[in-house]
Amino acid sequence: MRVARHRSIVGRVHAQGTATTDELAALCGVSLATTRRDLIELERLGALRRVHGGAVPAGDADAVRGFAEVAATHAADKHAVARRAAAMVHDGDCVVLDIGTTTRLLAAELRGRPVTVVTASLAVLDVLRDDDAVELILLGGVVRRTYHSLVGSLTEDAVRQVGGSHVFLGASGVRPDGTVLDTTAVEVPVKRALLQAARTSVLLVDRHKLPGTGSLRVCEAGAVDVLLTNDGADPATLAACRAAGTEVVLA
Image (cartoon, rainbow, N blue to C red; front, side):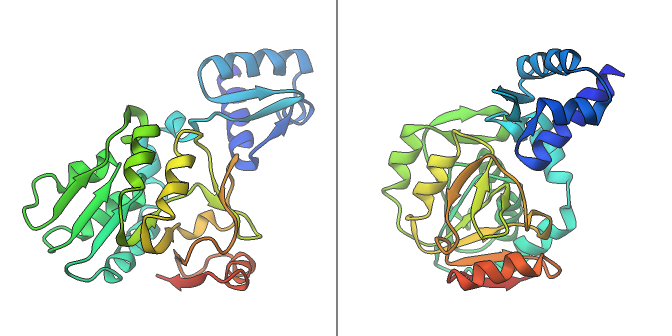
């Protein structure tokens, strides 16, 4: 029973971005005291963060699920987005790849091509490390093992030295008004720096992230040049992105 409650609590908090103690108690059919004890334990495990009156996702929410599990979620849609993104890249381009499971798939699509790839993603490094055709530049920083990435002030400073043709970004979701969201505090400053690292910024999100959730705002609608997602994504969210000046490309 306790494991099932914990699963329900974490699922609700991550789905909504926040949840009150009263709401979670009603969801699980238990007392407020039991719910508070559950939240204390889940925070200790790193599954969420307690706030006054409820809980929000932990700063490292994706790490609770793990990189492999995230990669397996909606894999076909992510592959379609990655293939379409690769078609935007021309031989000789310098592209910057954000961390994440979709950018790792994009890296696989770029194997064997005469391009330069700049990244703070250890997953991208694993895909391209033995490819002599690709010039691979790895940004410095602190290793975040749970999500195969480099983060911190060294990463942010290194990003500011980069000037690519395209930067391909990931995110946890896009709000109905077009705001780009993420769930990990240490990744957000890097993403914001990446927005300035190339002539064209491209947000890669599968259709299930439109609209999506996240506890932290990366940027407002219109800050990204291109939104690349799947056919079948929420029409209202796509319309809000277009109205803000973002080009929408469907895979």
